[in-house]
Amino acid sequence: MTENHDSPAGNQPPQYGSNPNGGQPQYPGGQPQYQGGDEGNGHGPLQNQGGDLAAPKAVHTAARLIYISAAISVISLIISPFVFMATDEYKTLADQGQAAYAWGFFSAGAIFSLIVIVLQLLSARAATRGKNWGRIVLLILAILSLLGLGGAFQDAPGIIGAIGTILLIIGTIMLWVGQSGRWFKELKQRRNPMNR
Image (cartoon, rainbow, N blue to C red; front, side, top):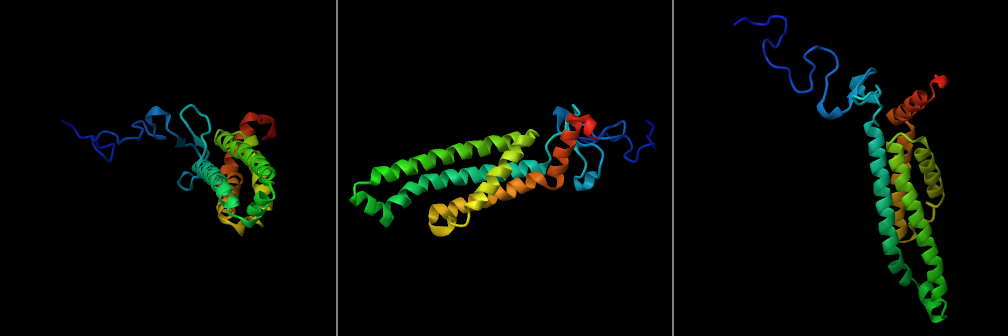
């Protein structure tokens, strides 16, 4: 039996993920791998074996924060009616026979909030798929949420909602900076080669 002196590993079989012919490691099932760039720091564009750019980890982390923000907003919506019924304002309206009007406004606000939450979820999903409109919509929602953040610390649903707003803002910022920003820029350049 002869020894293989060309390889430091001798006759050992290649390790999982390594390419026996040299070059970039290949992974079964099309798992993403770095191609080019500063791979150790995650600055290179992430590609799957089909050559398509896959979303970097920062994009998925941002989307998770936005999903958590949406879940917190739903919890806030569920708690809000109970807090509202415990206020002196509601008791006064109920004594005057105007509770139905208050519930009408409250219901309209809840429906609007649900529409915004669905839009937030769809936009985050679109952003993970490289759709720039998703992060633009999230930026608009984050700015509008930031404007309403000032009066949010008055009651429990407001505090819970403020936490959701802060997570939305952080997640949205993450979609615009660093690795995420470079990924969207690279996607745009691939779609419009004339912009290079």
